[in-house]
Image 1 (spheres, rainbow, N blue to C red):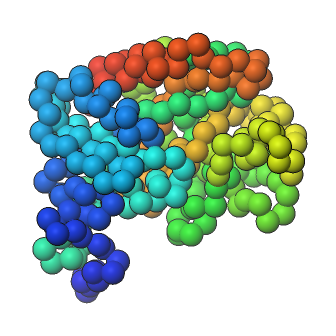
Image 2 (cartoon, rainbow, N blue to C red):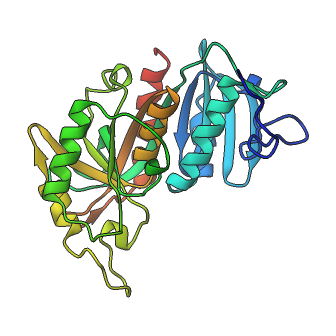
Length: 292
């Protein structure tokens, strides 16, 4: 039986929009770009030929419009996988729950969700201002253990190798790993680096930055850089990708994460014009997304 979802579980506002995003089902496209920074949403939508709708609630800004005949939604997530949990679940609800009856639709829609973000490189050969496609998202953030999911044999092998090579203090993280949607990743090859992206639960100590607080894992960055398993290595780390890939797996959506590298932690370099790198990533990606 398709049970009705209670008002306390699926929260709708006075205009019938999902609570956090303030978006109604008809205002969502099937192809979605996520960005962290709310101010980056108009930097994407300024390339639209036509802007259809604009909504904002808290850090969640959503624009839907067209590039040529391609309908696209761009939404800001804010920072971290806690916000990804909100955004991915509400995007899925918009696509796959009938808001009038509060029941799951009999025919489910698989969304295409592409993150365009920023990141720090963990390999010397991945320079600042370059672009990385995340072949996998490896989470140190503890979101996905709250969901039931199935890993592929390849994912299990990579995760086992990670646990053997990278030491984590007991009780700090339960690593999870998910692969990108190959149908999307195969479209972003020329001009892009590819590697495993580690998703961290914070910007400072969880990414090996020590200002005044002492680190419990002072060798973490070096261990991530040294990790190898067959052709795979860890190219970069950030704070959202594993949540997107993991919830995409759970909810049945095709997901890809692409990052502009604004820092190289091995070289200890930071981009001199990160905004330009992000703008170039947006333009390059939109040309590909328009043809999906």
